[in-house]
Image (cartoon, rainbow, N blue to C red; front, side, top):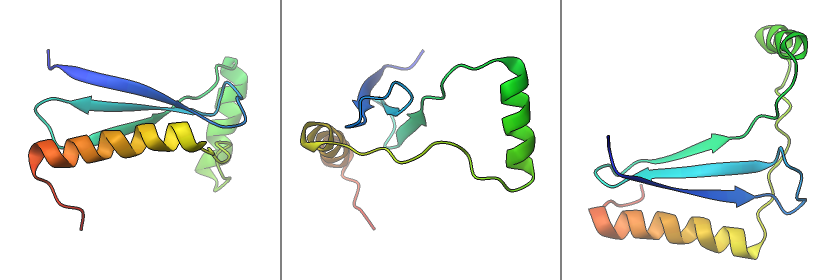
Length: 89
């Protein structure tokens, strides 16, 4: 199993469905962002899936990061770039 680190970034509104998990692996230059989707019943997920297939926008809303969360994300990105010598293009 690869060594990895993850950090949760929370939305400024503090709604439980508005947060992102940022995952980094020690041997990769990639940074993975995963949205948390609130748990809902089978039928609700099925209906939302069908709506999405037919062009409805997913109900993710905006995630607004306050200053502390922005600094966390910036630090993760800078550390990954500095450690691997990657450049932003």
